[in-house]
Length: 297
Length: 297
Image 1 (spheres, rainbow over the protein chains, first blue to last red):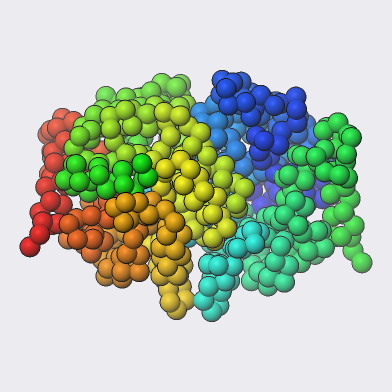
Image 2: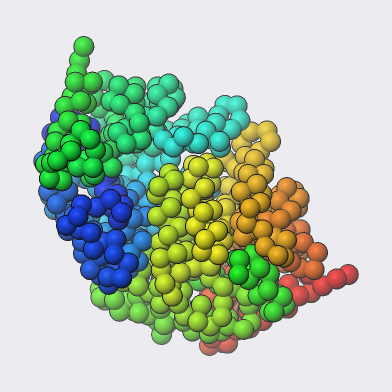
């Protein structure tokens, strides 16, 4: 089944659009996984700790949220051992029935983009992702081979359009119309061939919740494009800021929280709780918040 | 010693600005490494073949050219085993006295960009790169942590400004002035704090040889920025198209060739030669071509 339809079904089944970002900041992991940040320990042991932590987070997510989003940078800090942990975490998430969006933000000339798409969406066996994030800076010919792989592997993309960081406007607002709008129109076009029965495409866009007015504009420019909305939680935006990214019925978008879930035990709100309880409560609170924010008026 | 000075010294010592791209296209490897493309073979064996091939290429490059540029996508196709091969190839190149530019084109929000910089430039021990390529789409705050890591690890960056692919203008020419010029000005500014004794910065820019007039303009906008110039050889540009990217004395730029060197035995020009001879001859021809093109008139 095409990615858009699997995504739409998973969101409907869970009754929420929450995406848990698996960002193993080595410095922030709970004490029982502290070997992950011990630079004198063998990398294989450090990576095993990362894997053990994230597999527990995956278990907390299973059946509660539709998808998880591992972030490759934090795995890559542990080299090949980190890459092995990535494979195990992705496989565990798939086995738990979660959709997996690989947050890799790759992008290169066509022959190289094809290799990235094969790496993450096609060749990786049980460790393949359902979708990945990609960077549009190189242009349409760099995206074309990714679209081909998505079509034959029933996979998806999320193209960076307007990112959630404070300085994202420097280049993304350049020109008239602003670059992000030009990219948005292209993303909607690239996705036209990959629409599912649900009416949405498997080619999505990343649009930060931290630019709420922009979010409404970009949603209108991309009516068939599923959005991946970062910026909620630790990055400062609340559920209401993300609402303009949704279509009717709470469809068409996922909202990501990474640090706010994984390291919830570190926040004053969850002070004193064991990390698992804090993370579980943080997931539940996010789910409730979006159910309320997206409920029909 | 800072990256800019190491680079400048290496180019002077070799007497040429040639950069050999280590792009292990599995489908193109010489017959003796064919197991790399055998999808029924264990990934560890496939990755070992990639590693064996590239270590031979590294040996051909040592003492002849200043630097090599492994491309992460082709390693990532083999998952964690590919990541292990990457580590071994980077370590072999460093041990052979070559500078290593990791062509990874990463870019993310600040906390994630920092993790990428640590992964490739700081934490990787013998497998750390001297520099990496990065994507500027997210803006200045996504580059800032990379600059910090470069300063403390004596490493470098090459920021994508104008790429060599045919469709690179779609977004890179957007606006007035064109986006690539705006990015170029920022890159020159970001590099101001990281200039070496040679006068050049450790913060470089990627500008394709396939847009020769643009190359002169961008060189002028970034007078202290070392360039990494792709597009020569298999992508269609000759040495003369790359010349506008250089400063006086053949300084300030590296020109990359990947497929034209690694798979030289497949080209009519080298028909019938064993692959090692073909690759050696292709390296020698590229070196000669640039010595002539850059010789004082």
